[in-house]
Image (cartoon, rainbow, N blue to C red; front, top):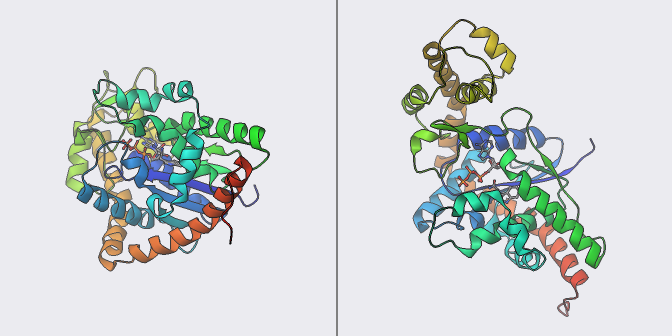
Length: 331
Ligand code: ATP
Ligand code: LTN
């Protein structure tokens, strides 16, 4: 694989979870040295559900610091806030006009997040057009995401193809980059739902910033299946399979190794060890996070990142506008 352009983002809608880390951030880090990477804190996406201003500000800075704490090197990858690059909002509108209502109505994330709600913001519905704009602005070939974003990526590909068909070859059609193991970490209280940072039940997720005791408590209370064997069998033992995936991803072992190591042992012993594996995996990240936050370096990182991102994004936006027939500003 030659040098690729990579773009991805995480919403600043809460504290990042182990699911965000395993499904997305681990790959961000893995890709940064080989490729030309842009990693964004999707604060414009975060406001598709109501956010307290002070909380939004804190969460956005916290996600940025976690990117660095997880191992992203700002001299390699551009780390930036979506709201700092105005081309995102602008291309989002252009993409919205190319998106069909039916396409948006089929999005499972929209169905899940709007289910049972009385007042659903239009932003939640239009969310995928903004996400398409995010990706297309950078001519990204690769988009590292968890499994839940596959459908949004498919729509982005369709929109790029539609644009090129209507207006001539302008946009790059991106490919998703989804991990083989850990693409969908499930909720600790219900293995039929993905672990999600905006779940009101904090016991359902492990935050990357949870203290060792919180992690131990959450894992000891995590739901388990009937029986007592530690076997990886998603259809029949979804809860234990999820915990095994977390174990494997945090310890660097394969699922087979984890299964072999716990043959003949029960859930209690396994969960106890799992808690320590998670605590240990997060310890260096939490230490680095504290350093990054107290140094205040994140503001400079975000300023540099936005500058690098804007240069690329503005160029694409101008090509798109020209292709669509907008009159260029005279100099
Ligand atoms: P929210 O709950 O606020 O909708 P989220 O926790 O689902 O947020 P996003 O910001 O939507 O997180 O996702 C950021 C990245 O993390 C995406 O690439 C997404 O696929 C990935 N991701 C999120 N949750 C999981 C999970 N449980 N397992 C694997 N990957 C995940
Ligand atoms: N919708 C994504 C977050 C996101 C994103 C992106 C991911 C916003 N823009 C661009 C990849 C590329 C989510 O994970 N919910």
